[in-house]
Structure formats: structure tokens, C-alpha cells
Image (tube, rainbow, N blue to C red; front, side, top):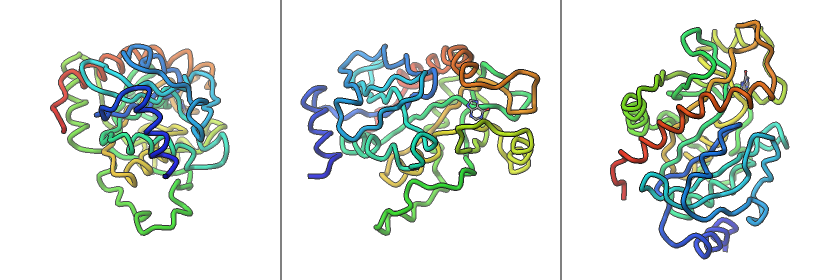
Length: 270
Ligand code: HPA
């Protein structure tokens, strides 16, 4: 039996058989939403092979249960490429979501904005991305399935539902392109100018490898950035991880309102 099927069986034993309709991945400083899920929390270290999600601001547990009347599986923390040099570090958790029967994935992250109209404390819905880090989590994947089309990586229907939820909650949710830098160092001002020239609206250190893996596994995806700062050189504010963690809760309140409304208004998908 594959590892993901074994872990899915373990999770079903503890959290029940019903397939989660939605997977959620929570980014830096955004992990507390998992505390609102009525269900079963399983720390990553009880799920052999799950990453340890060692960055502060993350809550490394899987919570399976109900949120706003929907069955969800929430990954309260992620591991990043920069922690290990492995772009496929989230492959097993995503395989487990797929093995549980989850078909839709909402990802969140903290990001720096390149656009004056998207300020810290605001949100951005990803309408596309640039894998600027140059890595790919499917390198080494031996099957033909590795040639994943990425044209619809950011699912139009899910985006429309998230936009409608944001409108209903009175939350601004501009769309934009997210550019993935490897980190862990932040970008230079020249890199931020380069990203802008390439068509990016925000920069961050996560999410893109997970979307590639999720598309490989057949999950439909949408992602929202919580903007914690302006990109390097675009404001006088110093950029740091502490600043990211301090700013994330401001956008997180809006994000939570949008996600709750999205789930509440979601159409049945199965
Ligand atoms: N750059 C990269 N990642 C980030 C940033 C940033 O400015 N802010 C939050 N995560």
C-alpha cells in the first residue's frame, strides 16, 4: 500500500470516513483558522512522513472536520522549499488529501505587494503565478503525468466563488500574479523591479510548488495572499519575518471572513 493510502486510512480511523470537500493550506501567521474547525486535530508528527513545518507562525497539524457546514481538511502549516532545498516537500500531505477524496484546494500565504493599490493588511486573489524560483516539485517524477498543464492552475470557478464571497463580506479582493522566490532571504529592490517588469503583482516564498503538485494530483486550486508588506524598496518599512507575523493577523481577519462565507455559500460539488 502506498504511504498516502496508509495515512489516509489512519486519518479516516481517527476523523471519520467522509471525504473532505475542501483542503485548506494556511500560511505564515494564518494558522489559527484551524482552531475553529469542529473535528479531529492530528499533529504532523503523528503522521509519518509529514514535514515538520518548522517556521514559526505555522501550526503543524492536520484538522479534519466541519467549518461553516462543509467538511474540510486543514493543513495548519506548510514546509517551504527553503527549509530543505526540496520543492516536493508538501507532496505527501497533498497526496493524502487526494487519497481522502478531496478535490478542491484553497491555499493561503503571506506575501509582499508590488502594487500601490494593494497595501499591507489587504488580500490578493492569485489569478496566475510565475515560478521564478526555478525549481519544480515534479522533477524526478518518472511517469508521463509529470507533464502537467498549468493553463488553468488557478481555477476560474473557485476564483469566481471566492470573489463573490469577498464582495458579500465587503472585503476588497483584487486579482494578481504571484511570483515565487525561493527565499529564505527576502528580495533585493532590483529583484522586486525585475518581478514587476515580468508582470508580477506580489512576491512570496511558497504556494507555487503546492499548486503544481495539486494539479498533478487532479485537485482544483485557488490561492489568496495576505499582504504583509510592500516589496523591498517600495516603502521605507523594514522587511522581516517578525514583521510578516505581526502583520498577518490584520489581513487574516479579512481572509477568515472570505473563507467562511465561501464555504457557507459553496455549491455542492459531489
Ligand atoms: N517577499 C517574499 N515573501 C514574503 C514577503 C516578501 O516581501 N512578505 C511576506 N512573505
